[in-house]
Image (cartoon, rainbow, N blue to C red):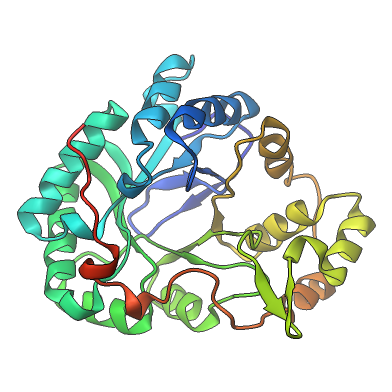
Length: 297
């Protein structure tokens, strides 16, 4: 798929995606194009965006402005809960594809489950199945789905999600969800893979970037703590989508394929789990609290 040096992961329908991609969550539209351009220049061939981010157009503009062919860049975006429902989700694809400037999206996923209105979630996913059958997307998946959401989805739909994008980093590892995904052939994709959200450890605000275990491993490899965490994900078979708008950090995050963590180092990072979520509680997602209109253009 890609011509860069990034290894690919193969999802359950045979589609390949580059292991590391650029995330653009909370990146303002006017900064998104520059960040994506810097990432493509560095060698990234995978970009993750979402309708709710409001920056799909910036992603598409950067890809069009590059010298790369469309087929060299793996494009991933998400449908927001306000556009759930069969016909609404089909239209949401049209909105996203139009902003991205593409005819086909490589990976289209549902951004959240709607636990209190799961019928809408199911209808939205069945629309993704139709888009897949029509060749408008190459793979479909979900995000922030817990075991109970995945279980019901698998019971009532036909296509097993290719990906479940969830919060995973050393301080919050969601092992039960990851294990369920692995059992059913669903690739775990980590958002906030370096723990960008502030967490509590031992009753105090702390950061994975300053964790003494991670810092020690980084020093042993002459790498940064962020690079060590990304390497931890990659060696454990996860897709990662670190976010940055700084060219230097974008390049640093990409430079993770020239070293290996030992088994003891992987285990030491595994032992850092606090089981404390940084993002919203998936069971708390409702249209009343989280709904927002996704513009047509």
